[in-house]
Image 1 (cartoon, one colour):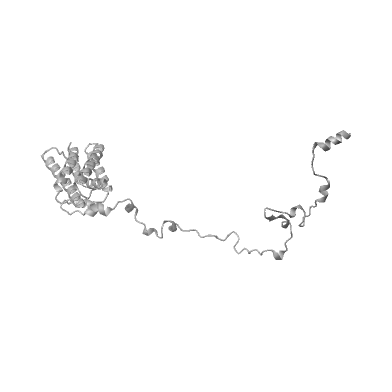
Image 2 (tube, helix red, strand yellow):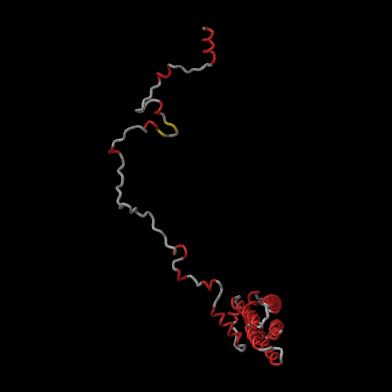
Length: 256
């Protein structure tokens, strides 16, 4: 047995003794191992008794039952979008659609001798030209001609050609949208020609004369607007000639 006792004492050497437990007292009133501070916090103060007069008084509840006090005032939608909705521009104006300018351009085309306003004609307005192109294709459809593809294709090629030509001839230059807008508005007399083609044939002498007059009307109105918008004095005939070629193609579609 003595050998076994020696084996147990030599198996694990430690400095721990049972007598050390009696020396350590667990005093919860401020002494003992829990009186140490760890991480800046005094755990000894956690269990101490605090008198009621030293406690901070709580604020009494002044609200009503089921009606809590509102902590914040909700903001109105006007604070996000502006002071007043009336100050915002109309939706059509933001989209670039001005019915007053559309009407003035239409009157300028219908009245060839009327002086064109260069500030209005220099705008990029495609709402009126799109409507006139659709109306021209609709009148051709009434005559039994489905030519919507030719109308839009010839319009795109003609606008591109006039855009290059006017940039070479003018000193200020012009945008593609302005060229398309002017040529589209001046297509209005061609709608009258296609409307006549629904009622009677244009392949006779009367049709040829009417077609020549409509082509001259469209080309004269377009050249007048280009001259006033681009300040190209003395070059109206040079601008009217390519415009007459373009509108002549539309006239051929209406006749045949």
